[in-house]
Image (tube, rainbow over all chains, first blue to last red; front, side, top):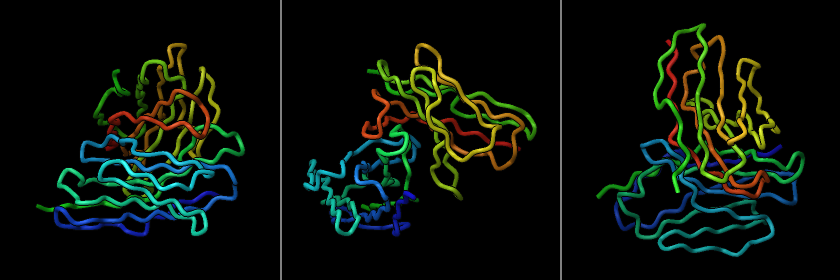
Length: 117
Length: 114
């Protein structure tokens, strides 16, 4: 069965601090896709990144970076020099290619990030 | 390009009533998925439609149903509303229907059942 665990319920940091959001996943499939979404107070989920199971290269996009490690089934997200606008709930999600192979995201419980000035 | 739109944004209904929520995907997107978000259960998959066909369904009772039209717009219906149906209902669209495609979400419809 597929499962995504985000053990950190809430993280509070001061602006300009670096912060890492943890994500651990479980799947029996060899082909799968991992995603991160941001949910600001407005409620809309904003797509941040997609990673497939065959690509373990880390990715950097501005202040955001992602570390994918299949050996530990983790897909962690780091925000460098955090800003108040980064305050939101962040969700990690998993999509499996086997079975129907169709669209179905399994989400973690989310991590609420509070960045104070 | 316009994003995913959902109507209405807020809804208050009474137990036992039924409700219909609407979703317009991003232009050109053929897959539409629905998710329910509650404080207790988090984000849960309801169903997914592609070319007017429901291809995947989550673990929800038959009171939850949906459909997709030829222009890819989708509606979901909940009959005989229960208090536990109070939630944020999110619609997402993607260009392709495979597991690898990223989904783009709408702002959601917040349903309150009293």
